[in-house]
Amino acid sequence: MPLGIPAVAGVIDRRILLNYRVDADAMAAALPAPFEPLTVDGDAVGGICLIRLRDLRPRGLPAAIGVGSENAAHRVAVEWERADGTMEGGVYVPRRDTSSRLFALGGGRLFSDRHFLADFDVTEAGDRYAVTMESRDGEARVHVAGERADGLPADSVFDSLAAASSFFERGSVGLSATGDREDYYAIELRTDEWAVEPLAVEAAASSYFEDASRFPPDAVELDHALLMRDVAHTWHENEPPCAAPGG
Image 1: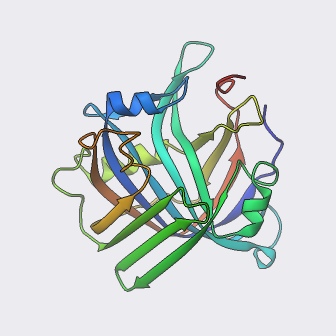
Image 2 (image 1 turned 90 degrees about the vertical axis):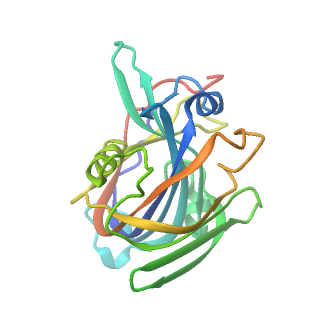
């Protein structure tokens, strides 16, 4: 059931979507029911959203009282069948990390679900970006470094920037399960204007997607990264797709 969380407004100061192409069978084995990987040319698409937010506050209140944070969300593009037989898509989020003690303490009450406290090292200089995230519990590490580019890598599963942009814009609903609730949390991101730029990746690492106990070594390949900057947005609670496993 929805939690009744009010809509939250703010600004995406910087968002990097680090994306991997993953063997569809391997990805399906890592997903809980009822989710199936949403594929592009036969490959599943997973990744990490590294996002810096500012001016976050309940919608309708002034930006001056808002808060900010660095955050990371592990994501997998998925689809599932609703009760009426139609298919719906979004992203399954197995883990969220944050620099904010408020978010970490308020996860599942003030915010969508549990956020793990993490340390972020960020460098931004002109067109170059580097972000490293290390969780305090030692369970997650992400690193990406690169610079703004004119297009996607030639071997990307997406044949154009427009195709990639449309794919990720449609995946605006994030879903995550918790251990003490029967339902998935469902949070929808709505932006005032959707715009992404290619980020040419010079270095990348992910403890989640490089975990050999989760994926065979040859099942995951880096595909591309996208950049968003200075985007006004709101977060809205959404209807969950179904009961979580065991619920």
